[in-house]
Length: 187
Image (tube, rainbow, N blue to C red; front, side):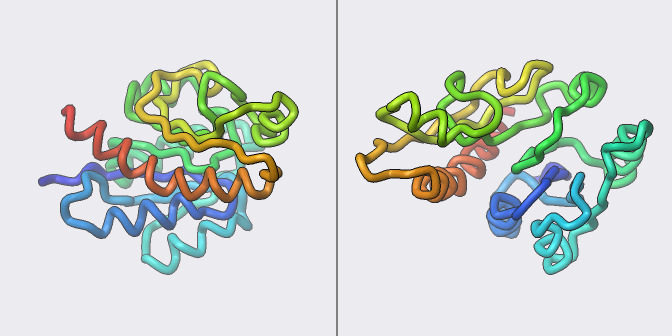
């Protein structure tokens, strides 16, 4: 099996990146993480790229030509698939057009509910019964692409934002790899 050369975009801690790296070490897993891009120079997740000797690059999205730098590196590393794992920046229409149905994101809610930020506080304020995560294709509307996979759990009476985040992340570590396998099983 020829693994798809994949780039993971991150902004923060990188626990989903670490999890995907672990899965990608398995010969039967369909992707090979060949590049990590971060829009935050101090993103903790870059530690995992260094540790596993994966090329990584910080791209300052405040500069006008930052997208050219992204394209240059995606081409340089022959990237054919992109995973957004806690990347806190809107993906440009140009990138979406060039990687049509080849960019996926993991979101900490059961989309279409609670798109965007502050999902856990909004869930609690809304007295939701269930929480979870969604892996979806990225399109031009925020958190609106076709859903690949969702996982959920019951919200318990004593759950707060911190507990919801913890439970959701545990689900994400299963959902993201499952969604990737599902995508490439179809192709």
